[in-house]
Length: 223
Image (tube, rainbow, N blue to C red; front, top):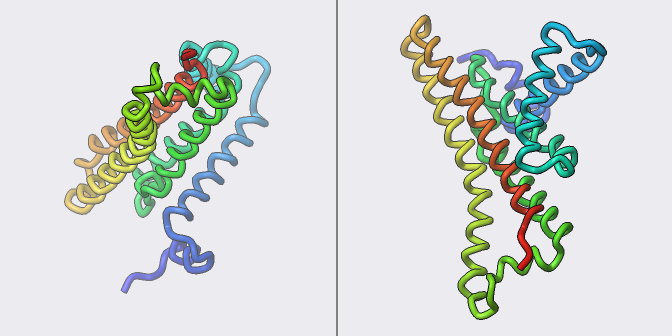
């Protein structure tokens, strides 16, 4: 019988499932790193800060090309926070005995619902009834056909965001576990590189789709 791990102790003490314990741990790590970065910033960037600022500026410019200069400052904090959180969750699968929270559908589904509610709220706030009207189609007599199609399209985005991320990370996690079990030394290294690439790619895809959905909602054409 194996000795209980620290995770087992936390789960027993709090009554929380493992993926939530890992989620809170990752959130604590991100907040700690953010505070460290904040106090170490310099007015004249150099070294790592210079590289980091170039990356952030490039990402910001990329979002700005999609959302526009006026809208980007309003929505960039949310979508970049989601991307950072997803990235950190994904790469924890490279750490032995860690289970990435994004390999649990509850985590990915909650983020997908957040994005869905957020961009729907933006569309209604900016366009009012005109945003709701676009669900009915260009002419009233097509409404019985258009409304179900539009609803399926929008709710399918929740499935797309959540299941894609969950499926890829869960599959990668299982692949790593099997390979580490069968060949625990040099062979897993190339696989770990591929998994790291996939983890980064999945964070970017969620980030990009969220940005596109927001852009569509705030630029909905008048009907």
